[in-house]
Length: 250
Image 1 (tube, one colour):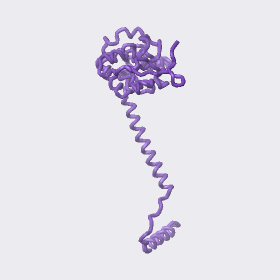
Image 2: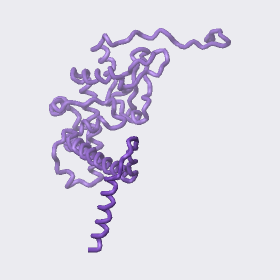
Image 3: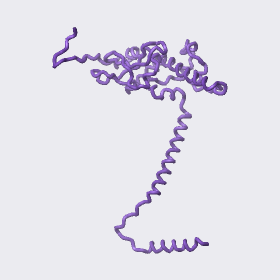
Image 4: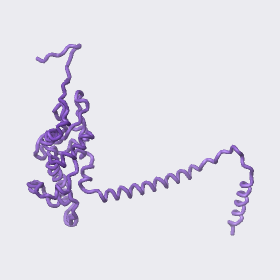
């Protein structure tokens, strides 16, 4: 009952305000900053919730291959078709090179496995490493096929493999290449079809990718297949000078 008089006084005040004459040029009252902050916080929290829901659903729907190819440093990889991986002929000879081969293959293809129940954490990490190596060895074969070359062509057109750092190559798009076809013999490099030389990728994350996952054949077969994309060889080169005079080699 103690609140009733207060309510009456509030109502009377409101009635007086409503009967008071309003100024024609009156400005709207400034919004309460606290209310704005609360509303903005509410909107942000709602947005964060929506984004988390979206990202969560995306993570749930993302297959292992897409996830792996989108990791930082793996931008050179294309996504290998499941049909190609499921054909045993295409994987001939790989089972002897990869530990936990069957489990690694199941992981790549998103096949449900009970290994998580029986394996230790260390064994699970070994399976994940084996899956990455197995995918790399499958990838180097796939990019020599018609579909694989077409997938790499799209990346080349977008200069996703980087550009030649040589000044006279004028930003020529490059192609990934390995200096060896044997795993763990070197990291991936980029090949410039204009100056026909190889360079270290600019990203430090790409520097750790095994060169055998792209091999020594790919850039040459690519340029043979898409001959119209092969640029004219660079004719300009740097000329060392001293006081404007060309330095003669001894």
